[in-house]
Amino acid sequence: MKWLWLGRNLLALVVVSAITRAPAQTAGTAGQDQASSQPQNQNPDQAPAQNPNQETNSQAGNMAASGESRAPMPLPLNIDAGSLQFSQEMEHTNYLTGGVNVGASYDDNLLSARTAQLGGYSYSVMPEIGIDLSRPRLLLNLNYSGGYTVNQRFSSYNSDSQSAGIDLSYRLSPHVNLRLTDRFTMTTGFLDQGQGNPTGIGTGVIQEPYLSVITPFARHSDDMATAQLTYQYTAGDLVGMSGTFDESAFGTPPTGSAALVDSQSIEADGFYTHRFTPRNWSGVAYVFQRLTFDPATESVDTHSLYLFHTIYLQRRMQLAFFAGPEYSELNTQVVSTIVAIPLVSVVAVPDTRQRLSVAGGASFSWLGERTSISASGLRKVSDGGGLLTAVDMTTGTASIRRQLYRSATVELAAIYGDSRALDQASSTFREIKSASGSLVWVQRMGRDFSAALGYARDYQQQLVPTVPSVNIYHNRGWITLNYHFTKPLGR
Image (tube, rainbow, N blue to C red; front, top):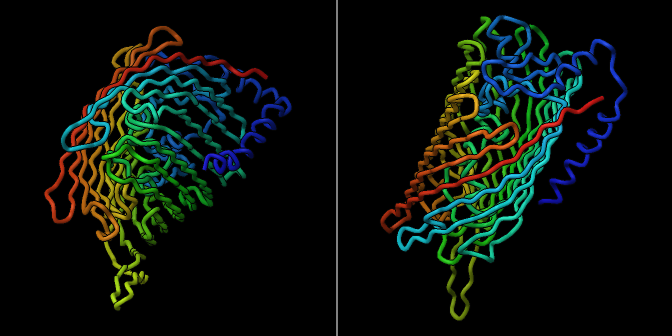
């Protein structure tokens, strides 16, 4: 799968080479780029000037709220909806970034066991490098981090960790925009999977995978790619389509842990949105999704039709509601044993079941100068997060980030999930309920250094047929030291 990701992004490297060798621009454009290449001002009271070349969805939302003509992406389908960046942090482009992150974490229940809990430390060193480029019709972000993780309890799981991503926006014409993103991670243990914001993973609320299940300590790789094309054919009408691919694979967990399930998701959608007033947009979206699992012989196809409404309450503040019917077709195999002395044979017969249900949710986003809030709720058919196959998922996430003063930021996050197996015969668990809360303090120490201290409390209830439910708890903590530099790219 790593080679698949590298192959998909080879084209991006060619694009970077072509862009960096592009000829000088006109005097007017060069002046704009020269202004944008100044170092970013981190003081929230002195937000930098807007880059005229950069067109984020937040800016489109501002225009929608003020009655201007550029149409925004519907919030439930917006790739940027989960970001907690402060508004002044978005104004960066034409930069080379890099640094190194050194961290340590502790989990008091590595095996996610009910009794005889086993705790342990993990240590990691992760260098990183990235590039942000802007041109009149193109925005490009590339980033990569790779290092090594050492585990106190399970030395056989000592291994490299990698994370890489690409985000490309290109204006094909004045009214047609293309967006391509890809994020690949290969990690082991809590240090990698437990510190990130539960939102902001590069998909809209409707397309996002199941995030709240707490899996045992194991090697995990994930590759998520999206492609999105939009066309605004009038001042108040926007149509678009997108595709999302997500492949999640686990290694073998330690003895005594629950078995883990690999999954693959392919999703395609199309939408139309119309502006009724400067602050109110409504529309309709069709979403198709196919989920497959390994080693389980199960797959599910879903067809969903959503009606949605987005309200731009004020500058950079959006609220959306969406709901509609969801048709599911579950394909499994019924295994039976036939005894005919002296022969005993096992027969697997394909089985297909259909059903009609209601899917929907809500999403809220506010990106301020010192405070950012993101919250969402969703109910639909989804993957099982590594412990189940296809499930009825009900989940909610909320995050708030606050800049207390110039050099300190605090972030609170919570996530809740309830997943019920569509086919209990092919899943170890009948239902899983989970809840997590985390608190992270980030302290800047000068221009290039920062430290982060975090704590998370997790709860998970695992219901197994014919036996009492299993309640699992985790206390997790981590500390990281980060050196990060930013260098403007000249012409």
